[in-house]
Length: 152
Image (cartoon, rainbow, N blue to C red; front, side, top):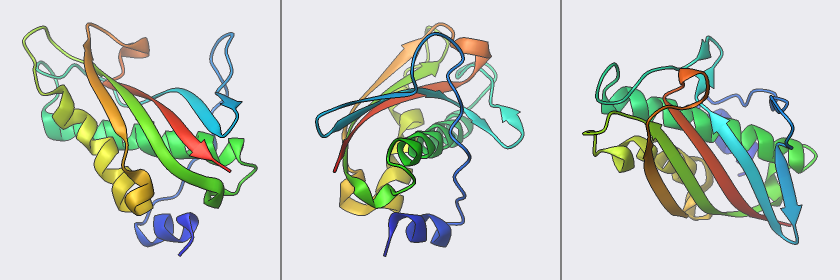
């Protein structure tokens, strides 16, 4: 089954890839690696804002991270001229979690993205990962995730 077909079976519609908000590009391809700039947590209703350990719980943070992964795939689709089946594998994610100083469940938050990518992509979605705390993130969003993908 195609990646688009798997997404459809999961009830996921990728949004249009957003344009950069400043002087950077949304992705850079070097050989067979595609580096995708950080995607912030947002959905069809707007920004998903909050601070883990203060205004959000782990489940809400994981849902925000899942949205970041969906946005990463939207950027990937744009970079691959609409053909997600050119994806070989997810290589690495770096997840930033807007959290309080005493919050220590950043990995559980970023699991929202990791679990979604494995669900949507199978073994090609398995990846290396970092999950780190941030005192704040742009626009007050809960999560930001960047990714490296192997493509053909």
